[in-house]
Image (cartoon, rainbow, N blue to C red; front, top):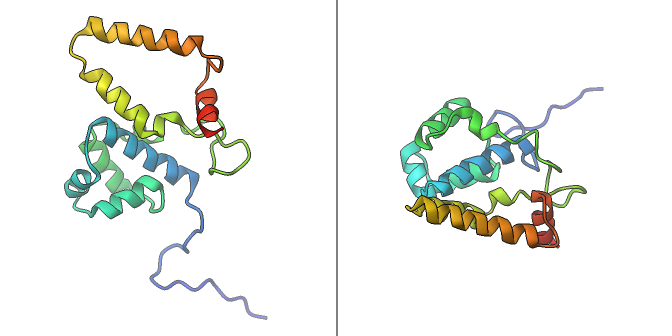
Length: 157
């Protein structure tokens, strides 16, 4: 009896059907930082010497980011390499959409990132503080207050 190895067309590791949750998380952190900086996928791709499609694949977790590429991204996005792994162990329901217990991270949403970017463009610190206090007050008066999970579940539901 012989055991056959999986067929590989181009070498490397066999293709996985579902991206690794770690690759998805790292990719989402790349996207999060890129959007906060107001950088397009095309601009990041040019800085890395890639196509924007490759950056899309990295951000979705479809393609794994190698160590040297991650280092280059950290330099371009002006964050330490550890930034891409932050909050990974703290995410409730870390896993794939559709799995029981999965909770979408509102910090990964474009709306959240654009809000943060707009907030920090407010030059007057007094105005910025007032807006911060107002948003907190409105959020605390909502019936589903208190957690990021509540916000994610509210949007999903």
